[in-house]
Every structure is written in C-alpha cells, then in structure tokens.
Image 1 (tube, chains in turn cyan, blue):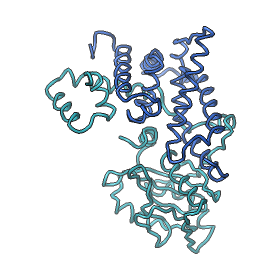
Image 2: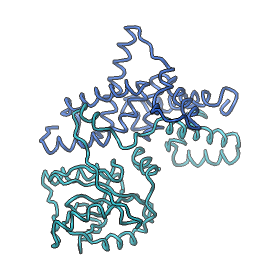
Image 3: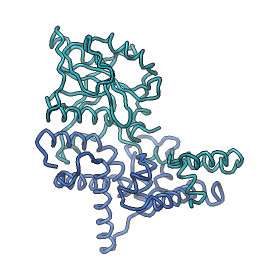
Length: 232
Length: 174
C-alpha cells in the first residue's frame, strides 16, 4: 500500500487513476495541510524543471559534428503579423516558383514512403516550430506552429521547401494529417503525407475553422509539450 | 534492425531530435554539463554501433535512456574504485553560467540544482525521467528494469529530500 508521500507523488505524476485519484481528491477537500503539501511539491517540481531546461535551439553544430550526426536545417521564416501565415510565407516562395500546376505526390507504402512517414512523425513529435528534418526524397519538412483543437487534440501546421504544407493532429501517440494546402487535396483523416508543389492557404484556413483552432501556443508551451511527450 | 541507408538516416534524424532531452538527462545523471556531454557522446556512439540491438517499433528514446544509465553506472563504479568523488559545489554552478548578470531567482534555481545533485543516483535518475522528462512510472520502470513499486517509493523519497532542501526540515511535509 502506498504511503502518504507516494500517493502525493503519484498524484502529481499522473499515476494515480480511477477510484484512487477520486479518493485522494476527496481527501484533499477535507485536509488543508494535504493541499498545501501537494501545492508545495508541485512548485518544487516546477523549480526543478526551470533549473534543468531543454536547451533553446537544440544541440549546436559543433556537438552534432562531435557526435557524427548531421545538422538539421532551419526553415526560413518571414515576419508577418497574420497569425496563420507567418510560417507558411517562408516556404511559399519556393513552392510557387516550383510550379503553378498542382502536383500531388501521394506517397506509396514503399520502403521510401515508410521512411518518409517515420520522418514526418519524428518531425511532428519532437521538433520545435521552425526546424526541419529531411524526408527520404531530400526535401526538408517541419512544424511551423502548434495549436489546440476544440476537441482537445494538439495539432501542428507543417511545411517544407518544395513540398506543400498541411495540418496534422495528434491522437493516440500518432500524428494524423487533417488537411493539406494543396488545392482540393483535403485528406480528411487519411494518415498519408501528401506533398504538393502548389499551395492554397484557403484549404488550411477551412481546416482551422473545422478543428476550432486555438491561438498558436508560445514557444515555452510548445517546448514543454515536446519534452513531456505531449502530456499536459 | 538491418539498417538500410534510408532507415539509418531516419534513425539518425530521430536521435538528433531526441538529443536535447538526452542531454538534459545526461547532465542530471553526471551532475555537470561537461561530464553530461561526455556521457551523451558515449551514449550516442554506443547506440549507433549497436543499433542492430534496438527493436524497431519499441521506443528508441527509452533504449537510449537505458544505454546512458548503464554507461553512467559503469563510470560511477570505476570512479568508486579509483576513489574519485563528485563535488556537489561544482554541480551547483552548472547550467546557465553564460556570463550574463545574475538575475532574480537564480539562487532558487541553484538551490534546486543542488537539491537534485544531492540525491542518490537511483533517485536522481528517476527524477530526471519522471519529473523532468514526463515519463510514466511504467515507462521509467521499464527503462531502469525495476518494479513500479520501487519507482513509486524512490520518487516519493526523492521529492521529500528535495522539499527539505528547498524549504527546510520544519516546513511543509514535516
């Protein structure tokens, strides 16, 4: 049987569930000392997290060289007041120059396609907005901003040089593409990455409305979510 | 894993994406940024040379946390035999010494670092996994290959020690 301190810790760590959690919360309602202890431990945790932050901007190039790992490229980001377009603008130049015709490449479940899917999942799960990793094709892709959908899911708009952008939302540990910026290419709940040489922000705006998008999360919040594996 | 070049590139990208979290974990384990970076480097090298031992589909991150923990334990044992001790004052000064002016709250953060550094290895590694990295008790138990009950009790003892270090004996959880 867990003692008082183990129960407080488990409560703070999200490991107290079901009836145990309800019983503990009822106990707190009747015990101010317990509430004070829980609050103090929670503040201690916050202090520890502040004392050991995740480094801004990841790991520097010199360290990556030392480790024999390639440096991730940064997406060019244009300054823009529009809350939804600042990230998209950065890649639009390349995308528009590439082609006026919309070329949708639906990735086939080949080894290359699977590798791309994996890269995409990694980018959505672990990269701060503005950083990219390369798909098997060599094209970089990465998140440009993060928001919360009305249904509580976390979603990220993604984009890449020479490939289109879109929106993916996280459910059950997996990022599923909700919409792409290619004209007429709303993929619904398809989990396949579509890339396009053209871009249509209207498609994304419609998806943002449909999802009930919150304001974009700030960098701190986003970093916290990445480091906690997208747990609250 | 029989890694083709595309798969290997994908693994490398995943490791790069994971490095900031691994670096923090190693810093906490080794109680200093420099030793933490050495530990991170040894961990990445071992992961890359033994990548065929990683099961695709299982968590690469958990596997690398485990590698780091094993290398750290080996190093601590070797230091113990050589009689080298770790200086807690050194640990207190780690992180954030970038020449900027001391800002308000800095001493609180130093206290928090000292409290963490003073924890025994087996408690500190759990604080790094659960409180800093947000791993569940189940994941932490799997990474360290210990029972969940042990995770629970060590985390609780660690938090009691941290609380005493930050607030003194008489307050809070007395």
